[in-house]
Figure 1 (cartoon, rainbow, N blue to C red):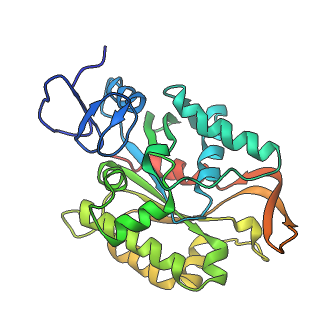
Figure 2 (figure 1 turned 90 degrees about the vertical axis):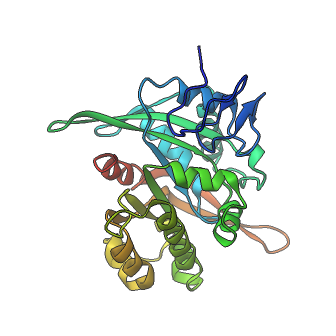
Length: 299
């Protein structure tokens, strides 16, 4: 039976209500009144025998986060290399099912709504067997956050409780960056990632001045680039030098990755001249690797 004890937050006991493990607010009814974490998520975290190490996934609007999360969950459920994931409840399967169904129909899933109470949450318990270190693991606990909400919190810290709580509670963070945007749209993607790192530093700065938790910076949609990217770190130094230097200066453990979920895409032009991408096949690359790297660095 779930009790008021929690693992991610040390808020005082609240009579007749459960304390939200993310923001410390009171949970009554279906969700937390402050950060909108559903009761299923709160109970799922509270049911763990040990404090879970939480990894979050964030990025700007249009970066492909929903697709990335869905494919990641699907790969983890089947097991890839040393990583194996188990959904902690039926609610954790909704996003995976939605994404895989859409991709099978050769379409990308709908855009994430801006309203926090409409976000889909996932809680996946990930285990990784390493010969020298025994068996370790972490929890992927995150809502499918709208990029607009992240941008709003970065611009006005404290304005979006859910985003702030995720960043404050995480033991590791995956930052998604749109590769096409980096190449074609100037520095908007770079500035967003830099703002997110600065925000992370304000909440997690270590004793020696650097953020200790691991941060994976993932260039998405590399399948849409005209030329393949062989070295993610070299690509970052060349196309996002300010971001690369910030990571060197502020993060103890940072690494760049390249990822894609579609082996190839087609373009459909509607009667008004608008273009939309169509995934022709599902061929994920570089989706699991960032989390395999983070697994050995989580505390």
